[in-house]
Image (cartoon, rainbow, N blue to C red):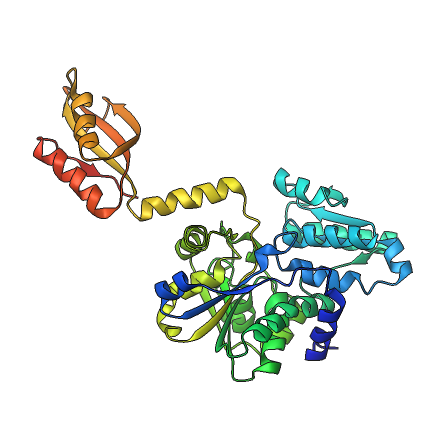
Length: 403
């Protein structure tokens, strides 16, 4: 067996009316920023917040009455878990999701809302999958892989089909790669309709699973803490790799800085939310902009299920990168009124003080001197420099602390 364009067209008919036909929108702001003609496929608008609804729906609508009665099981701590639980509830099939023991409570609760039975077992997702396969064998349930399944790939491929229905003259597509199911499906649809279209996969540079599989013995190391959890897969699927590898023109790696910047840009420019994996294709545009300048590019915003605390942290870190939040260390004589004088200078320049730490115990300062670590909100580089210059003019020696 393999995956064909006819499989994807059949999947599109099956899931019609059961998943969202998400918009493909031209972004004027991202186009101006990158120099490419950027079109965004907004899969974060699916009911469970990601493209995973497509594959799960295509798989489950094909269950026989007997299979539906026995139910489905999978191992996942992310979007596949929610999508499978949601689609199983819709078609009346019992669902069990095996999640690693350390899965955040919010993800467990989001999946439970769809009525699935949750089992927390295993330190890693691989260990959870071993348990899920055993449950499938013991209970006669159907195991549904997140990506290593032709029906799942066909469902995901409907996103690519829709992109070229909406904009047939796309020259380039950028698709994130985790286990490989999305790019296998989208690539199959895209190359069938437009053999000349250039297909780029995008991986987080800490998890180059597809690149590693392609390079064999020369594979780069895999692992680390990334905000792109949705594509942080140590091993690409065997089936999905076999389908996708001949279709992909090139795989691009993106670092954490570009991933964070892309998440922040979706919020600030597009007024939409992307998880780290969902923003990976925009991150690739930012990191490899010269390659796409002047071309009509379709990028898949694959999901928007980002933890709110992580999103807040990413947005704040972006303010630091833009020098809209600046930390200064100001040393002065340790006598009454000095802090008031320093803060007045900052206030007169229009800086907004967020935090102050008063440190008298720094051993690299004289005993009669103190240091203030002051975090300031500014309007950017020029404003930050004006505040530093004003403090210097008043006899202080402010040090801009490293970001």
